[in-house]
Amino acid sequence: MVGGDGMVFTTDGGSNWKLISVPGTGDILGITSVLNNWWFVRGSSIYQSTDDGSSWSMVHTAPSGTYNHLVSGNTNLWAVRSDGGISFYDYTAGIEDETRNTIPESFSISQNYPNPFNPTSKIKYQIPELSFVTLKVYDVLGNEVATLVNEEKPTGTNEVEFNAEGLPSGIYFYQLKAGSFSETKKMILLK
Image 1: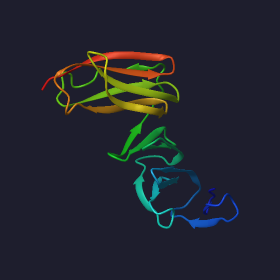
Image 2: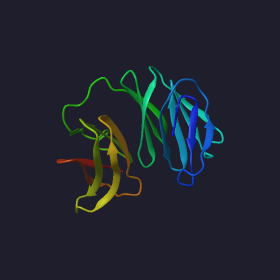
Image 3: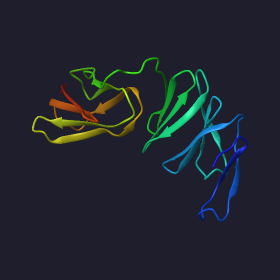
């Protein structure tokens, strides 16, 4: 549970509670746990604890606006800003800030770029509403060779990088599925 001055937590179903003081000023507007790390947003900052709240470090400051919501996935974190922007955190890449001024009107997936590619290519897609999204790559025989996305995603434009290192040159297909939407595109790996 969180409040303006800190948070309390229990490990025994509510019989005992521990008060944890946290840095920063203002209300705590979101808290979540991702891969045994705790995260919260307060004002224009994102804080992280890797030791169950004993210590906190500020890991990011918003480029504009203040944070007003926090959402997590399996290994990802999205912090929504008051100016409509989103800060995205992926444990493998760190935090990226993105301003989303428009909400997509429909599902879509763009052609990967570069294409042909060696060994990496980026795939951009748009979703108009919070949706469970899968983005998979298949070889010409229809065998799945990679799962790039398999989680709930917020509204907006997203981009993922496909690394085909270890795969032979050839034609591959990538397919985006979200709700009843499904679209497949072709890409060429040229080594």
